[in-house]
Figure 1: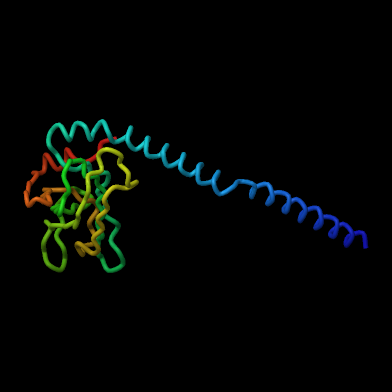
Figure 2: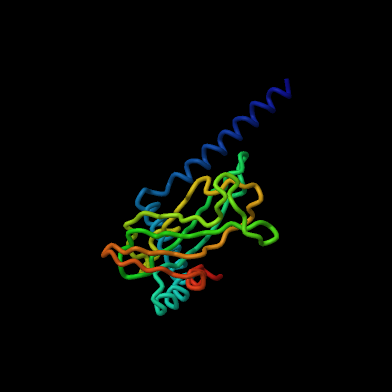
Length: 189
């Protein structure tokens, strides 16, 4: 009997604590929550500007239109297919129509690797715009994001490098950037 009384009292106290905790967390109004989220967003935006602006300024001075945040390949899937993702910002002052990344896969000992199906290593990956300039605010948290599925089929692919970037602007201007300039556009922490 004492056991049952203890359980009932414990349950009443526990439920009472939960209800008092819930009522205190719901006191924030929608306006206060919106203001808090706006403040957090402004802080994150300012951090992105401080983080990316110095390198973006250098690239703009060299007339390079992109700041590439990441170049990644996923581990080969169960069939050996390798996906590629590239995140970048348009730091030019013009809208971009297309960005074409020519990429090459390598194995763990730094050898170029070919696709086991089509025997090619060099692949062109196209990102379709329009991509508006991001330079002033880095508004979009991840910038532009291209993801390409099953670019190669080869289980030995360990990493990829950009060989060349071709940028086509909305006015029809096309500019090619060689390996050296392409690598300059990759963000250095």
